[in-house]
Image 1 (cartoon, rainbow, N blue to C red):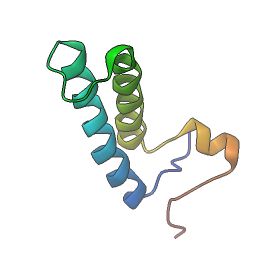
Image 2 (cartoon, rainbow, N blue to C red; image 1 turned 90 degrees about the vertical axis):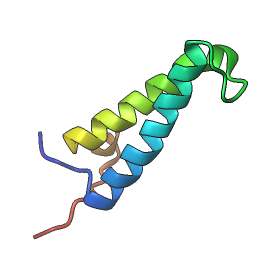
Image 3 (tube, one colour; image 1 turned 135 degrees about the vertical axis):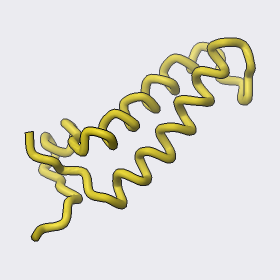
Image 4 (cartoon, rainbow, N blue to C red; image 1 turned 120 degrees about the vertical axis):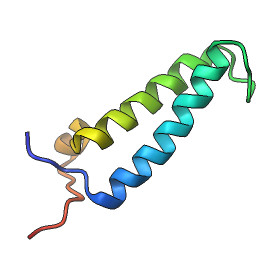
Length: 73
């Protein structure tokens, strides 16, 4: 599994993913920051996937689309 997520992409995924994960989880446990309702689970899941792909440095969707944001050395 070759890495296809570059450093800037990783930072963006970590920041946005962490925010989505926190907002989703807080909404699920009853502290609504936004009126997410039934969407809270999906928001939390998307955040989790974004954080996971950032930490692994690999995005399966990028493989399917032929995208690679890693720097070529």
